[in-house]
Length: 162
Length: 162
View 1 (tube, helix red, strand yellow):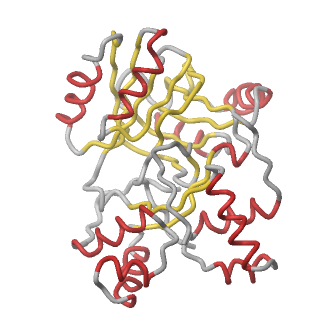
View 2 (cartoon, rainbow over the protein chains, first blue to last red; view 1 turned 30 degrees about the vertical axis):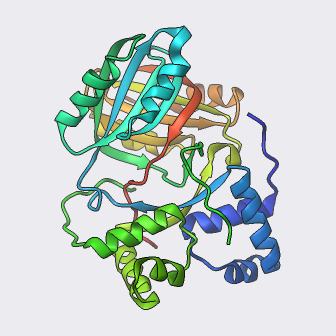
């Protein structure tokens, strides 16, 4: 991946907006000692480069007490990318990583009921051609999670600037 | 430390969910734009957002890419614990800045963590200087993240505002 070149101002902007994305450009400009135009331009560039998205993160209560679950997949090496793409298309799946290790794909999802996990892991993923083993585990407690950092992929639609 | 506390109860209605949906699409949309889309007043939108935020059920944030922080090397590490409660080990791991997510999990391993590093050299620091001092780790099973196809979480444990 190309290493983005971000300067101190970009990092200050990201830091400010990661705490509250609804601060106005005017307020940011005043706080950082730059013009509103600079703030607007920087934000636009960060969005266009796929380095930042603005979104709502809700607590588990609003998500009907979902549980984070991991589905670890062993798949044929020559089909890994295709299979990872197929898993990504499943609407219940939140994240898909291609890894080098004991498993070569990790899928993550938020489930409300165990039946859903069985359905996704066994019925939908294990049945994909080239997948030969699936293991699941459920997060019973989360000690740390930073929702402000992620991989921004084409699944994150970038809204048109007004 | 944010832990998923699922005991409190919080009431929300369709209007709350509609507002959250708009914020997911564009967290920088202003109250007036959201109000027009949903047929509400800007004051209602503002009040609802504040109520959700105050109840720690909503944060509207900038999510930035790992690459924006120079994290070009991600690892998923499964941890087996011995001779010490897994929750204690997980809390200690959560203190490490390189560790970006820590979950207690069911299944073959006790702890699942995501580690974000700048480059390969950071790995020896993490392994030899940091992880080696955490008591109770019996085995580490790492997987190198080669590619991330999808990474879209809208739910996270929400920490209180200080």
